[in-house]
Length: 98
Image 1 (cartoon, rainbow, N blue to C red):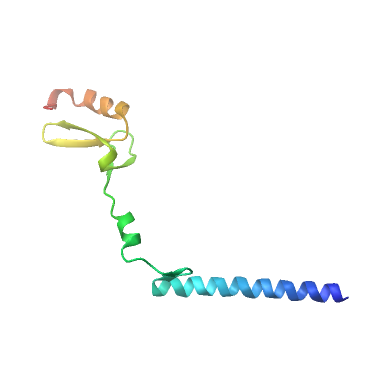
Image 2: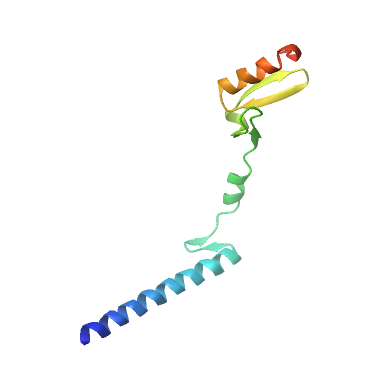
């Protein structure tokens, strides 16, 4: 009998802690404070500001600074791999200038 009451008390305490953590995270998200304190200024914005380009062959999004590029006429395209770039170059062989 004592063991069952003890287990109930432990379960209630665990549930109360989970509810408290949920509410703290919910309120922290609204105020700009997370569970571990204030956000660093611009920390989340810096990671979201990375320019992405879309590979015209396979549709993959690639970080522009890490992508391969090719020019055909006045059109510049960025690619995720050498295979995609070569496929695009083959389809634009007549208008390639660089």
